[in-house]
Length: 258
Image 1 (tube, helix red, strand yellow):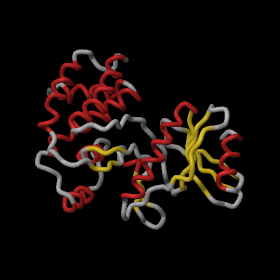
Image 2 (cartoon, one colour; image 1 turned 90 degrees about the vertical axis):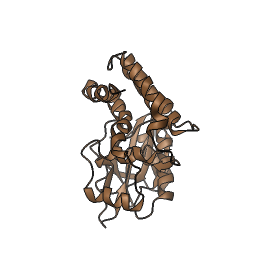
Image 3 (spheres, one colour; image 1 turned 120 degrees about the horizontal axis):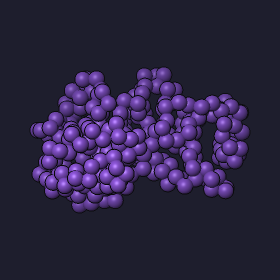
Image 4 (cartoon, helix red, strand yellow; image 1 turned 30 degrees about the horizontal axis):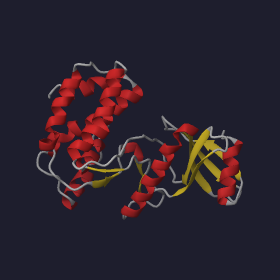
């Protein structure tokens, strides 16, 4: 199930040996497990290749930021992360919350002076290039992307950066047994808040009450509905590069408007 080396590291970290391990479903990038220690404490464990340890480090930092910022929403506590002594595997250990599901995504978060520059250079350009280089998108669409990059400064309203979960689709929130809302598996960064709201709509959307309550607490700027597709170009490009051409058509249909 999990390497003995990881079990030993966890036992040393938490002061109790691992007694039981069971696989958790739902992840497309990491192997995920529910582990139980000899003293009956449960935890959620993700493992991956040792070369991807930086991904777990970034997720741990993101979860810690969200725990500090969130009030009334539960965020899993990071218990530890490490690599095996031989460097072959990396792992991330979290508080176990019933019904949690794994998922992760690496992304560059180099700061920029403007949202338009950040979104162009740290989000869209790398994914666009990867999709074109792999043949998933037609090379001619690069011109359409360039047209969009030139206009991003006028398309998005000027707002201060917001702390974003970064991957807030319906599979990354749940309620624990006490009814407390929980958010999991972030890809945290500071960016334009419309990115977060747009992404919640990409795979079906949340209940209407969520959007009503959000707008009562912090109204979105005029025209935000017209910016949803532009916001979702990034996750659609990521899904194109991760999962293939089934998402490429949606990318092309959006970017051809520019």
